[in-house]
Image 1: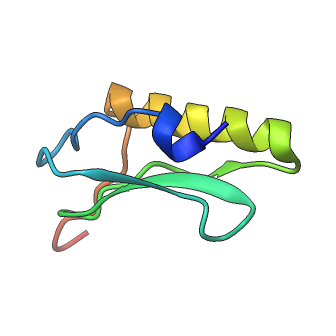
Image 2 (image 1 turned 90 degrees about the vertical axis):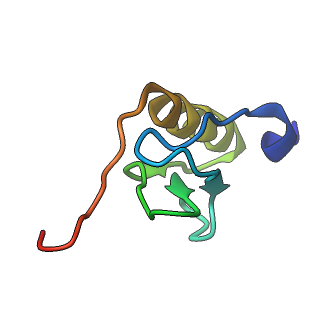
Image 3 (image 1 turned 30 degrees about the horizontal axis):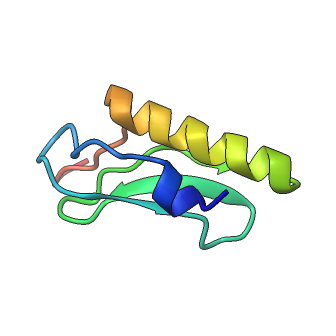
Length: 74
């Protein structure tokens, strides 16, 4: 499964910007807005099966709008 082609991300719930699904750390997935920096929490994985499920979970949470946003002064 090519995770990046199989999983669709809605626009950012705050600004409408594009979300980036990222496993750059090699142990967890996050989705981050490329415009305002809003993001999901971390979705950790230990093996390939968990990796796919964690990516789907991160995308589901993002698409539901359950993201973290840091504004100025926070």
